[in-house]
Image (cartoon, one colour):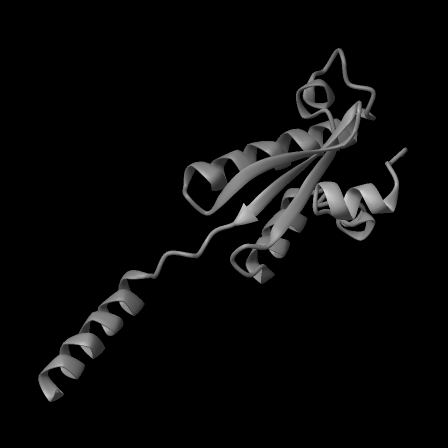
Length: 127
């Protein structure tokens, strides 16, 4: 895969070559990476042209890789719609973009939210 110079990647778009080479290739890989990610961390899930590479006719990817990409792209979209991340893309060459999922702050579970509310209430009464 042809990428632009390391200087351009790090100074103009904020991605290093290591970021671009550390691409999530499967849905399981995406979920594992997401579980370990801190808020604000970017997960690269594709480098290329996503719409073209997902298309059965236009894609130059092997069928198995295209199918994996389709599953990953659908999961990323579902995660973004659920408020778990933001979708971004960064151009890395005239014909390629890096597609990113930037992890959002995770919502509190009902149990931990209740515990925080109780701690806040007890803290106010003690003061």
